[in-house]
Amino acid sequence: MRTLSNLDANAIIATSAALAKRVEERFPGSGLAAVARELHVVSQTVQQRAVDIARPRVALRIVVASVICLLVVILIAGPLYAQIPNSFALPELVQVSEAALNLIVLIGGAVFFLATAERRLQRQRVLAAIHELRALAHIIDMHQLSKDPQRVLQPKFVLTPSSPKASFDAFALSRYLDYCGEMFSLTGKLAALYSMQLDDPVIIAAVNDIETLTTGLSRKVWQKIVLLHSRAVPADGS
Image (cartoon, rainbow, N blue to C red; front, side, top):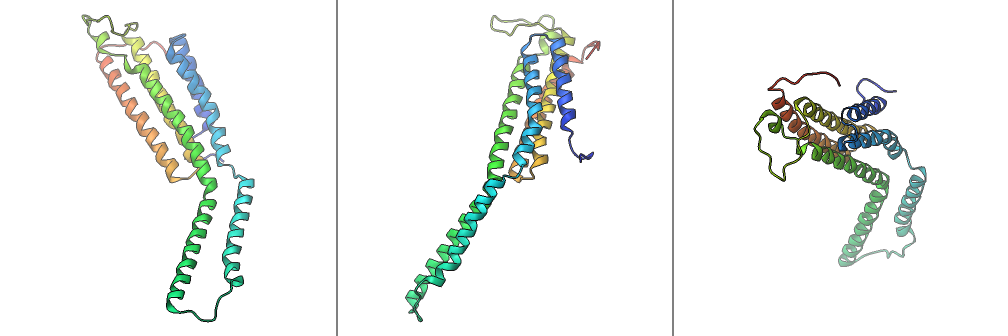
């Protein structure tokens, strides 16, 4: 049951859908609108993907348990069926002890590797999904990269032949940047859904990296918005 301390995946999906509509209505046919739609599509798959990744793999667990039991039987039965002399000379005792210790370490390592196989597979899938969100965050950042408030704030701003096309007034640019900020925030929230399903330190660290990335990118966007708000920007819609 969802508690107030957990993110609501359905609320995130609804928010991303509303944001995609707002961007399309404000900037129809724009690249940012396409990214907003892609973000919404990703949001629809994240929750189910996170649940699917966290679901126990019964077949894998049976195979792993069977192999571990076999290794334990070999470890226990080996000395029982080996021809062990009644007495050892000291050099022979050292050699036998070293061989037994190496066997125990080897089987222990194999058991640990097998026992953590499911978690490693889950971690690999989550890290791949988080990488997708990281790439999406950088795509959003590329859209706001060339949106320079100084071009709006300075009427005599001189453009060069290679300058990006100036197509926004102060209000439109403010809305464009605000949408980018909202998309960064949603990207971070989508990443957090994975850490809610799997309590793994590597996954939590990767999610924290995404949140740090999106927060840093949002900070750049809001610095631009603050510059824009140094002059009056009428608020006439979403």
